[in-house]
Image 1 (cartoon, one colour):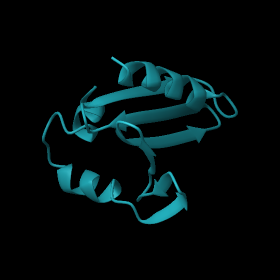
Image 2: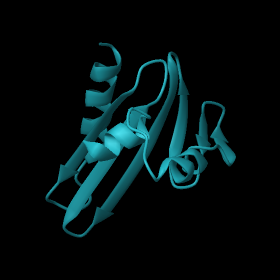
Image 3: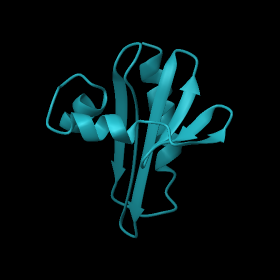
Image 4: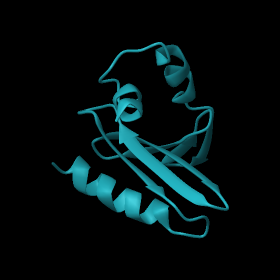
Length: 100
């Protein structure tokens, strides 16, 4: 919860400068997606969405959030490694949260 509060900008903290840098587009991937420092940035209707995944042989995680127009985010952590489709589950939940 604290991580999402920081990433969405709801809670100011000591990592604000690092988060701002991480969310800065570095290069385009497609016409609607850029890469930042460690995150993908989707340019969607209603604002940019930021996406970050991670996995090891024993866990998978995916986080999706937006800062504007209203801060929202979803994080899913699963106690199983790849190729568990935690990204699809997270994106589905995130789209539902964005609509409310």
